[in-house]
Image (cartoon, rainbow, N blue to C red; front, top):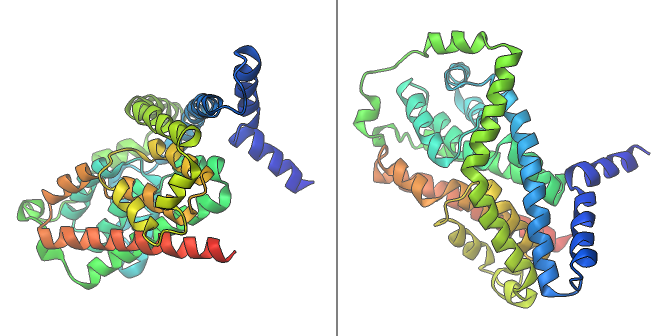
Length: 341
């Protein structure tokens, strides 16, 4: 009974099967579009996903932002400063999931953490984890692909962040930070900011959450529309045989191709989810799809260009190599597991 209740809630509240049925009825019965046609498959995919994603985004961003109101950059920095070694890397990666920063906005936070004297490996664990994994994307992943896939994505992202930060610590890359980042010595956390954060009331946190919903929706809506549009074209018009020939399990380079396709793109994870959904429906392996999503969020060109301004080439290549290697290994491992199962 518990499993049945959970399944119903998951289908109706998260996957919104009621909305899928409503959209299908609308185009099939009102507009008399043949349900077996390519147009029907594309247009229902587009309308259903756009409405569903914006509803879920609004709700999930509000909840995640309310939680994130307890984790200002100053407070995050203070927490990280209390831990050493691999535990600090683990905590840095975990806190990255609680902070509302994309790949580009994570870099100023990385600079602040480095100026504050936090270990470089810890700041890189945060820098890798923050754009890869956040609360809203975890829940949205679960609605589209199920909790198993969401868990795989989260664990993979955290592992890449922890291992990446640990390797950078082991190789002692501190000398490859641009000198201007370290000028002024170690700075203490902004006590006024921390005090202001502790004085936030329930009403203030609600207002902050509402503001975050408006700001994030305003920032990502175009990426979502474009992502859903690409997903709808893939779902309705591109033959499954063509997709499988490029990204299917029969192509040993599918994970590499997906990763390289994702890297030049600049999109939030919310814009990549509809594309990922369409690829999975076309039979692409879960490891290949997750590699594509991680490449878009963690290795986007704008973020790498920004990072190049604050680190020297050797450290930048180390960062790219660690993240790229982690994504490729993760992709092939999960494709192999899916194939064996």
